[in-house]
Length: 428
Image: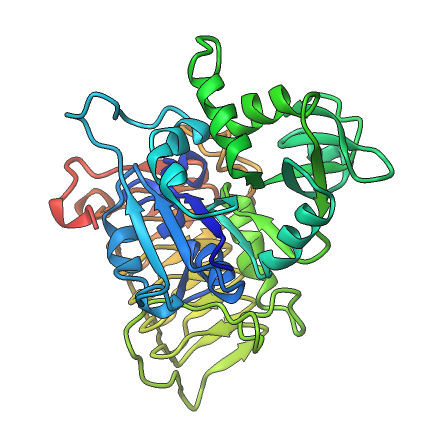
């Protein structure tokens, strides 16, 4: 599909993922053991034969840029296919930090105008799903639409977190409310849009001249256009998750541990690709016990792993137990340690006999009760947890914490521990 330009919005800070996205862009967060969240949008483009892809970055893009590289894993490094990383920078009259999703595209409007694309596909870089965009684009063309919005049906009680649409019998958008308190419809916007090129250019230019605009597709562009243009909703029926919160990120990882997961990572025509180091096979010791788990290549399991996702080169030593948890690259769970309903970032060391996630989850985090309140404890990259230390639920331990935990016997539920000084090597 060389007449479609895909633009992936990957610049948001992702505050609701707590310390997981504190030092990296949210789409660069590890998912499913060996992937990054951005891999899903990139792989979907590759599997749809979309040959022109732009990734719009802003917040701490280093690990994201390093991961994407020249785009080889997705076949986007050839004469006929390419990926471009577009970053804002100061010093040019028409360039500034992005002020919203629409503004990010507007500041790169030159690329849209110069492209040979017939349609512009706008994607979010922080969603987990496997699809072919060819079906949505075919629907857009069949309906002679100016804009098509991918929509997904959710329970009414959850719809208030999204843009909510009303569709008529033909699928045309008749009403739109952004994050309404009392949703009237179960159909939500997935943040995926197909625009006719000229319609997008016109809409973004008009929005840029509106001083009251938030420069956002959901808040401003779609609500301003659906009454005057042909805007349709493409009803997506397959697995899709917005992993923008700690709980939704944990849930989506746990979905992969089911006996027959809805999300197929290695389907022949929809394989999710990633840029990763070659790792040896996972190793399971004679005393290991693994149930309903996703264990990546290079991991070593000598203890017990249940309903968990384990990344490459992670180690679970003898007598250690990991349950309902997400363990990132190179993390070591020491002998006799327990990790229960927790997310451990890269290269964490859990000392022998330590217990992460003990007790109940009724006490929310004291500093961020809005995002850490469901019993999940989060440990930042390269933290060293002393042997024997008990850490309660809804705890946040910032990247690089070491000395701050020494001498403690217990860290109560809801506590937050941040490093007194952030080491420079953590900014990767």
